Image (cartoon, rainbow, N blue to C red; front, side, top):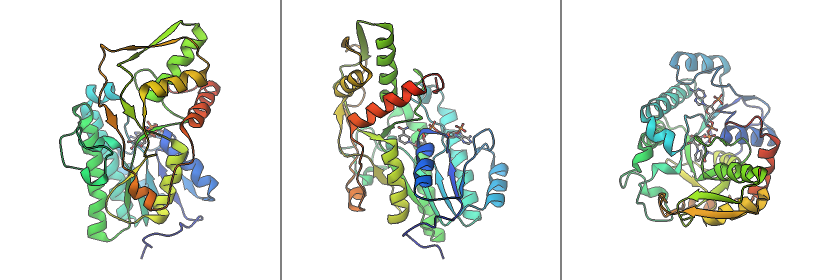
Length: 320
Ligand SMILES: NC(=O)c1ccc[n+]([C@@H]2O[C@H](COP(=O)([O-])OP(=O)(O)OC[C@H]3O[C@@H](n4cnc5c(N)ncnc54)[C@H](OP(=O)(O)O)[C@@H]3O)[C@@H](O)[C@H]2O)c1
């Protein structure tokens, strides 16, 4: 019988699905540093997780004992609202294929990763885990969110029907090395880093950002996220998804000022208030995670500074 929680065996085979992505690569680094010596990773080109037969053959061949599912079709608001079929169908297929094969091959512990967009658009702040399925979703990414909610339910169903100690975690906005810096696909923080760095290099007198800068958002460094994932795998055993964040938020204006500072941009920062602001506040309640004995270690300014440095070192190879 698999143990419900406690130390993972460092010599066991461990599949990190999505190991080249922002989250998966950080988890891979964390597991390596923690002494796991049989990590398994496949790029989407080597193993398309949408392909049910290929996934089943992969599990039969590699027999992983542990799995983190950090592979997903991920995108910003524009991509999500333009291609909802792809976000729904591809994510459902990836999840169902991996979770079904993991069940068939007796994976002992598994962590499924979703995102904070699973919560209702108008959820009270900070957002507690129990607010799941209590209201309507944000329509621009509802297809993605529904796929992720289905993943949480599949984890709960496996626990109920088969008694396996599989778990789910819902991270807040993440950033760090390996992020997507493309103007179309990127989230707010990498987009700001790119914009201010380009403005600095081009000697621009001002940078204009969308909205008023007043919405509040929470950001977690992806290395902290990876450490939380290992912590949860070893210390948490329950059906409910666990929020992963810092529990603190900042205005977009504050974030932009830190980015400009760290990038070395000294021009004007302007705000185009004719453009939409989005939700005024989005902050996860992380009481449950804190109670399990974990807290973040990377402060926002330090995290942004090291991400700027990483971006500069990889500016020719980052996803654009
Ligand atoms: N980034 C955030 O701020 C954030 C916040 C909350 C939650 N999350 C969650 O964390 C998870 C990972 O996100 P991320 O930011 O790391 O995304 P990402 O950087 O875009 O990485 C996604 C990974 O998934 C793999 N993948 C996609 N489609 C695949 C397929 N058909 N077959 C095999 N592999 C496939 C990609 O593999 P290749 O590189 O080989 O193509 C890539 O490694 C997602 O579930 C997301 O919801 C992210």
